[in-house]
Amino acid sequence: MPALRPRRFVPTVLMILAAFFVVTQPHKAAVAVNTAVGAVQTIAQALIAFSNGLG
Image 1 (cartoon, rainbow, N blue to C red):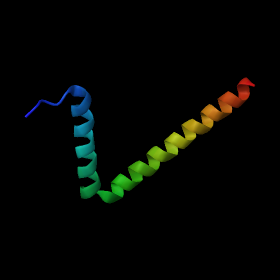
Image 2: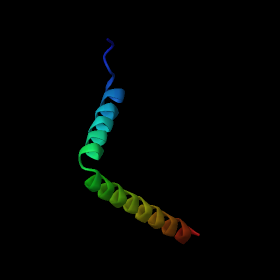
Image 3: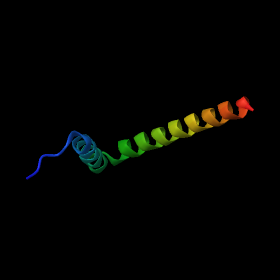
């Protein structure tokens, strides 16, 4: 069995942990995703406001 390279190993472990979290605690996972999406939207709005200010 070939060894996983670090570039593939870390994301694989994170995906397994995320899937386990979603299966065992779906409500907390939904809240976490909702919070993350809100944060990404806030960052996007800040970047848009910044780029509009540049002219």
